[in-house]
Amino acid sequence: MAKSLHDIGEGPMSSRLQAKIDLSLASRTPDAWPDAVVLLYGLCNNGIRGLRAPVPIVVPRAHDCITLLLGSRARYDEHFQANPGTFYRSPGWIERDSDPDANPASVTSRLGVTRDYAKLVEKYGEDNAKYLMETMGDWFKHYRRLTLINTGVGPYEKYRPICQAEARDRIWIYEEVAGDTVLIRKLLSGNWDDQDFLILRPGQKIAASNDETVICADGALGVNIKEVSKQ
Image (cartoon, rainbow, N blue to C red; front, side, top):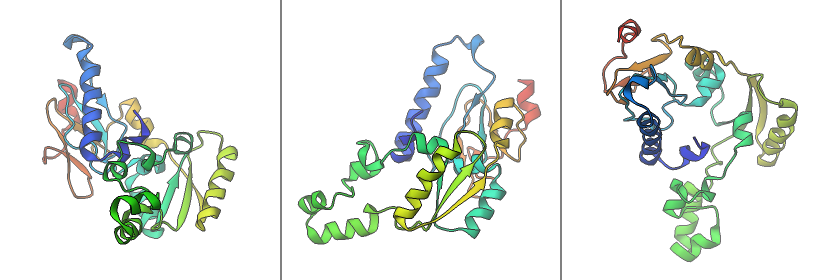
């Protein structure tokens, strides 16, 4: 799936992911369906809410993919609380970087809120253009630090100077933190404990739990793994 799904808003992101799930299953007869659909996403600004399938769906209990790269919710929360205003980078984000304003389906593009001040003045007038630039146009202004997550995957000697230059240009603090792929490895190997993963029954939908568990099934508790294994 395209990285830019995060830029197009909750509804369109969820719709595209659901279409992908539906298409992958529609191409097979039910007896050839997989045991489960593994979703390598966090809640991602509610972009996975409402997703469902006729087979179990397994989802990490994570607000976003930073948790997956750092290895746990606890570690992400600890770093986030100690370092507010942090912009995270990883090899995947660097290799597939995109500008939300350049994506016609992104929220900023659909609202006409870009960083092109002249076009905003032409469309909304000078006073409104200034307001839009201050409130939405420059979404980088809330960041103070750039953190490169090193999971040991990818040529970090190549990406380090790229991130250092970006931090320098934006007058941000630069740092590197060690990543951990344990959640990704557990997810892909089928080692699904209830603390780190939600398993939905066929037909249930993903919902936000609004607590430390992050996600739940239709507002209910997650499915017992032993029950799923018996199906």
